[in-house]
Image (cartoon, rainbow, N blue to C red; front, side, top):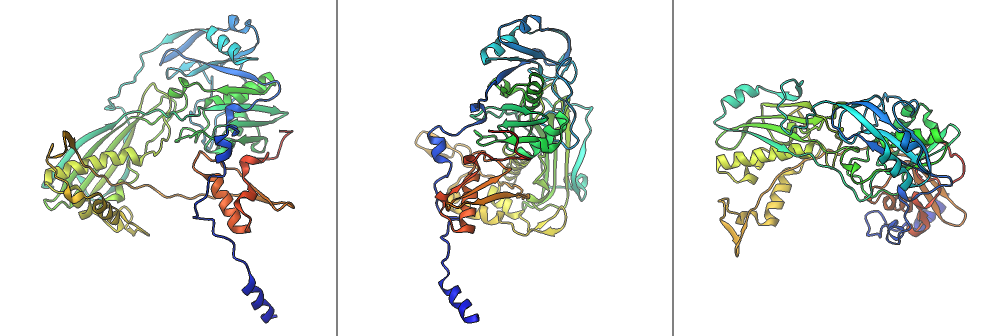
Length: 509
């Protein structure tokens, strides 16, 4: 038996290496030939169209709404609003970009907030009906100030060690500056869209979503139906950048409308609505206080940051995420505060938190380098640390020092001269700069279903999504690596009917 086993081991054929090998994207052909179906491309028998009506004030209350003219227009099935949308519930576990439910009350907290939705047989008819809805308001003064100096805010301590007060006061060299980053709107090529199809008490939502499972969880709560009765499908995404991580009001609106009119409903967010109703990166304002010795070693580091949020949400831009461990200092304090504005609720944007936060930290480090008359790379190398001083634990891996040294060498940093205007190429004035960065590495659980078929092919499906980053190709590589099947014989979830199916299959597709 041992001899036979040894012989079998000798003749075993190794599978070809596919993980890490150059491989054409498996979804490339359907995308380049236009056969890839994005959410807005789907159509179903009897499908109708929903077009939201947005508020034309930024703060106040709806005094009156006249939908009579819109309801009489050709092809119009309904105009839904606060009084007739039906029950929509709050979520207990999050997953929504905007915590307030569509048409929850008559309060207006930002310009463009959805106040009604027109439903008609064609898109043009729905657009005309939405434009015919007449509203009057009791308007209040909005607050969209970009100065985040409000006094009536609650400051939260995010991280602290040592005594920053005495550390900064006694430091021989000091930097005390405030930096701001502006609000930025996501605008991926594919705008948000939802198609809702009910079959009995089950609903299928075709979504442009970066999180089909969280979307399922959130919408089951909002609609008041069991989670297993909600199916979310997201085959292709024309980029997301963070605003498609959450379910926004149009998703609940489409589902509620479809349930009300008992027809499949398509709701497409317009490019104009992308600036108001599906999140944005909030404005930040960050005070940086750094104290250092003449040799460049930090003795204190403070980051006091604020970001704006909406009247109905508390989105926190975690600007201090990397600050406690990026540089060595005995005294550190990071605080945050939220400032309410009459704007839509902010959301993550690639990359959230640490990115605008590090802009302020690194800008202040550059200011310190100038005061010390020290090379900015050298300053950062002096303050590198192999221990996370926020908790006293050594890093499992940390390569900031190598990144700085190798980057400087390959860039030719030694040729830099710091004086303004001292570096030129012909008539062009050159400026060289550098910065350090850090970003967390998180992992979560995932399940996939692989089906081996009699024809020698395999299919793989997963409750996940590919926002253009190559997820389908990675799935194909992994299945090929584990089964030995060539990649071209593996069909990923975009090619099969049960793509990203969450919960039992309902009806025919």
